[in-house]
Image (tube, rainbow, N blue to C red; front, top):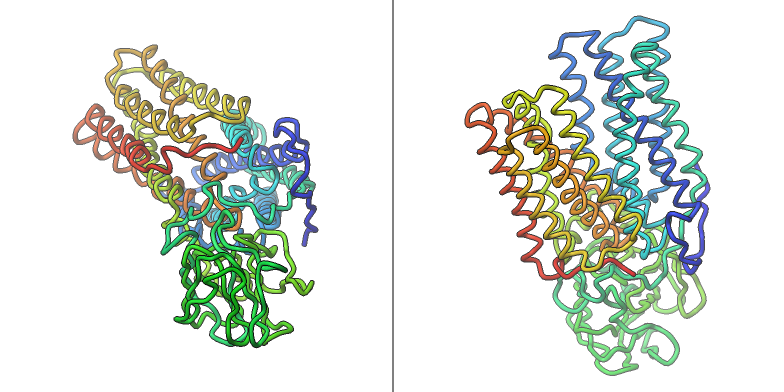
Length: 569
């Protein structure tokens, strides 16, 4: 178990590229990604050398299946136990598994079963590792630097893809699959101490989602739609992401009969069918019930368990026990508290700490993991920016993956460009994508990010369709460069908006959904693209793929909140 190092939330906002904490995270992440590249080369080579091509394909597929099936569960784990802890433990397991198989190959002859077991373990752990990695940047830097960190992460991914392949091939050529597995394990091992040394920033207790009050659609301003413990002495107070509810505290509320807490706010709230808190300082009747809030919010009774809050309303704090009426509740005006929910703990007016928090429905320490997953999916569905953003990402990946993988290979064969020509086209794409990540890393913020993302997506779609009709290799390289630049910029901005718009308490699950789309569903377009090209040729398939990719831009263009989304300054 690793100790969690924390940095105060109000620490100086150091630029990410000069922040040693961010650079340690980036170094660990990049080393792990290079290790991944070497590992996949070693696995494919060992599988081909050991069995038939079809058996090798099965071994490679064994790794992909658990990663796709378990990805959403991995997001729940990342949010429950913290992304740093999950990343360190999962990276350690990946390292141990790879080195164990390397040792086995050194001692005995290669076999398919050890490779299949390794692929199964690696894919399973990846399902936890990937969501945690996506949730970690929000805890290592400030919101104002998240866009720059996203660009730096993109550069790390590009560097790993460029360097990892030759290093893996060299390791296989020098010492065979066993040496390549050893090299991959050592690279992953380098990342572990770097990640351990990363300090987490304490999240400001009043931090919102970037959209302010009502970022999640509901039945009112920062609406609560959930279940609260039916026992007397438990209640809720506070409303909205941006603090639209009133704070509980001296002067803002008065105690009613039975020791209840009351929050002012003027809007009123329905508690078990009764309107309370209509005026500032109003009192409520009952043992420990809570009134107040704002925006006419509603809390409905339910059977979610003692002290458990489930729903989309943020700023909900629930505590078991207490001095008056069997339970006290504090609502800090939209403030989320509790380390389980990814926020700094708070205390009640009595000075006693809040001992159990449901984090606005984000996580529930004692609740079911399935329930947390449902809450996370509902959070995404009701979010005015994340919901259309996820759809745009899905359409963009579905239209992009097929043509730029198997489609490009078939196009090069059809035009007679050969392997070298295809390599030049891929190089053009890589340079363009790297330039887009570099732009974001250097600037740190792109004005009108939503609009830029939309038009970059639409421009990239046009370039994808044009690639199938270019006359020669040189023109294809130029078009691929534009695809990489525009698609890379669009993808980087999608990632930056996802990081800055999502509440950190949900980032594991949000990243899991985005990763599932990119790594689980989008690759399915590759065999479909190959079959379609065999039936109708490259031109029509590239055009259809461009239309699908462009639909992602249309979705973003039609979503007002996403179109007008900005990166934090």
